[in-house]
Amino acid sequence: MHELEVNVRFCETDLLGHVNNNNFFVYMEDSRIQFFKDLNLVADDWNFILASTKCDFIKQVYFNQTLLIQSHVMKIGNTSFHLEQDMYEKDSGELVAKGTSVIVQFDFHSQKSVPLTDEMRAELEYHQLATN
Image 1 (cartoon, helix red, strand yellow):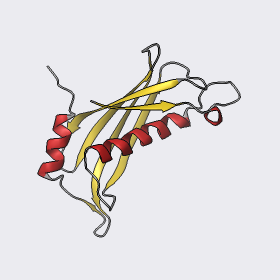
Image 2 (cartoon, rainbow, N blue to C red):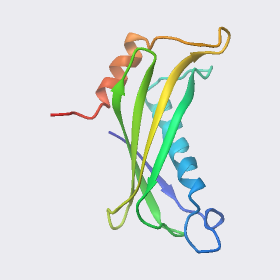
Image 3 (tube, helix red, strand yellow):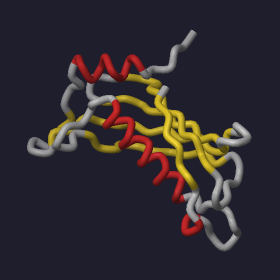
Image 4 (cartoon, rainbow, N blue to C red):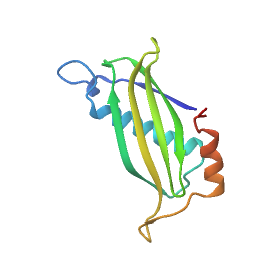
């Protein structure tokens, strides 16, 4: 499992005082980018696109709270993988949001998806959630 902490900034809240729902997608992106870097899935050139993303909002989040985003791979395909990102309020440990994304390895010159390398697959498998 990959983890990243995010501190909620005042500008990420709305008139109701809680984090605006759009910001959860930003948190997911920050975590996803760090996930790519930490697993050495990207080099100087960016080789992934986001095919789909979704987020379920479970509890309200407020300014100055710290979120812990735990990312793990749910499924690995030939050219893509599914990433699940659970967001917890760090102090209480309560689940506040649950996101999923489908990420595709993409060749921008040919404008086509390309197979994941064996090295990428090994890194992704290491972070794949075990299913019983």
